[in-house]
Length: 60
Image (cartoon, rainbow, N blue to C red; front, side):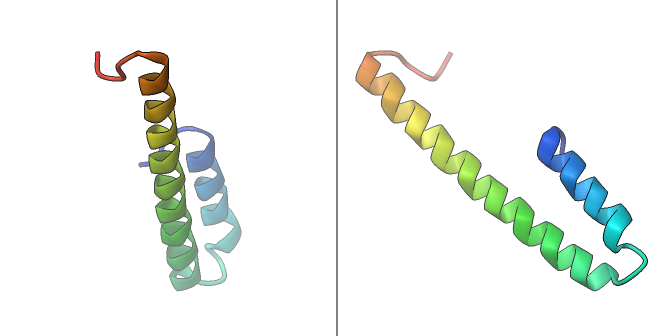
């Protein structure tokens, strides 16, 4: 299960769209999750580049 703020939004979508259509909910939720993963990946790479420029390593 997704955790954090965005996970709560997806859980809220469950409550809102559940009576209408599971198919629509599933498609929207999955698209939203993929979008969030892409954003998180880009953010990770941005942070890595910034860290490398500053002379730090992101690997502990």
